[in-house]
Length: 234
Image 1 (cartoon, rainbow, N blue to C red):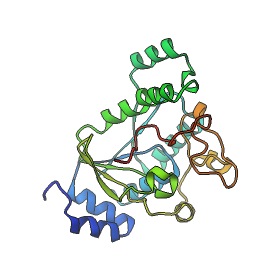
Image 2 (spheres, rainbow, N blue to C red; image 1 turned 90 degrees about the vertical axis):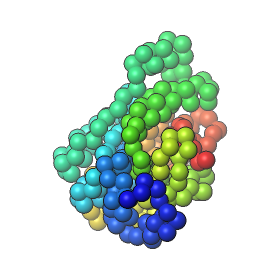
Image 3 (cartoon, helix red, strand yellow; image 1 turned 30 degrees about the vertical axis):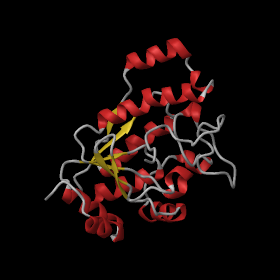
Image 4 (cartoon, rainbow, N blue to C red; image 1 turned 60 degrees about the horizontal axis):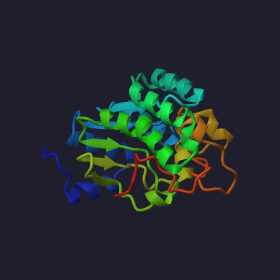
């Protein structure tokens, strides 16, 4: 099959149930489809569907070196539960050492520029390595998560990385996701039950109060679009 999605195929995928949509994509790009998982609730839903349906998707996660310990427990539980072998990508040590030497261990608090540089070193560069050779990048993005994500489509072309970005949960509500997790008894990070809706690095994430925006707990000390550079709408 051709390594492009036609408008008709995209429409079929958008209208298909989740498992069927993922199968259609992997059938179109066998061995060239990857899931980037932060082990957030959305990504756990996708991992469950991929694993239980034995879909040929390589799953990876990024270890920034500043994650909550609950993340590592969940990684082990997920691999044990679904018999997966989620690949872990780390930032390059020389990059981290140079940043800390110049900016300090917590230099990201001092400016948006410093924070974005830290995210680039710890997340964006490892992501780009992990995506090498992929034709489709599956994400757990949902339109409710932030203003930046409201305009995202289910299938988009990422011109910078020259691949398709597939967001199968883009139209899912938070309640729909939680119901699915309960129905399937999917393992998830216990910090979610403590108000941590969007979980990133430990020094950059806090719990949110009732009624706050879901992304308010990320980089709470700054006014920004609450993005690290991985998912910038083009």
